[in-house]
Image (spheres, rainbow, N blue to C red):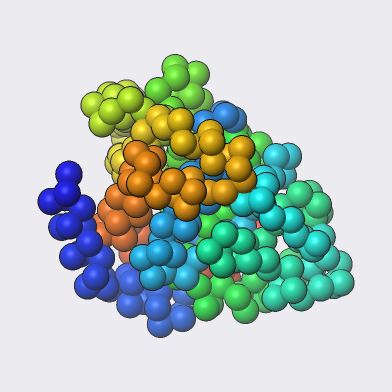
Length: 295
C-alpha cells in the first residue's frame, strides 16, 4: 500500500496536460458528487475529498448544492451570514458570499436561494454565470455537492458537469439506488461520465465486490463503464469528527478513513478523467448545458 501511495505521489508531482490546462486559468473542472440515496456519507466525503485535493496543492471551491439538506458548513462547525439568495438578488457579490471553512477551504453555502436558482430569468442566469465565472477561473476544481436521489435539480447539476462521482455503500438499497441514478442519467444526451467510490467498507475486497455489482450491470444493460476510484473504510473516527464538527481528515489525520481519502485524491489527480471530447466545459459550458436541459 505504501509503494502504491508513493507511486501515485510521483505521478501527481508531475502535472498532467489536464493539470496544466486547469492551472492556466482557462477552465475549471466541474465535478458533481452524487448518491442514489441519502445517508451514505456523501457530503462528508465531498468535504474531506476537497480538503485532500487542497492539501495536494489544488485550488478548490465547494458549492453546497443540496437543496433540502445543505450541511457542508455544519460539518465544519461554521456558519455563513450570506448564501446564494444574496447573490441572486444582487444584495452581495460572489466574493462576499464565499466563506472560508476548515483549512481556509472556500465554499458557497446552500439552503436559501437554491430553489430560486432553478426559476431565474435568462438575464439573471447570465448574471449568475458571470459571477461564478469570476471565481471559478481562479480554481482548479469546482465541486458541487448535490442532493441525494433523482430530483429534477440534481439531474440538472449532474448532467451539466464534466464528471460525476457517485458515492455508494455496501448496503443493498444503496447499491440499487446508485445504479438507478446511473441508468437514468445514461439516457441523457451527451451523458456525463461517472466514477464510483464505495464508502464505509470493511476492507478493499468488499469495495471491489460492491463495485463489480454496479459496474457489471451497467456494462451489461447500459454498455457503459463505471470505473472504481476507490473506497473509504468504516471508521469510528468519522462519527467522532462529525460530533466535533471538524472534518475527519483534520481531526484524525492518521485514521483509516483519512488515509483512504488521501489515497483517493492522489489517484484522482494521477488518473484524471475528462468528458468524451477530451476537454473541460468550464462554468460557461456548464451553464449552457444546464440551460439546455431546463428547456
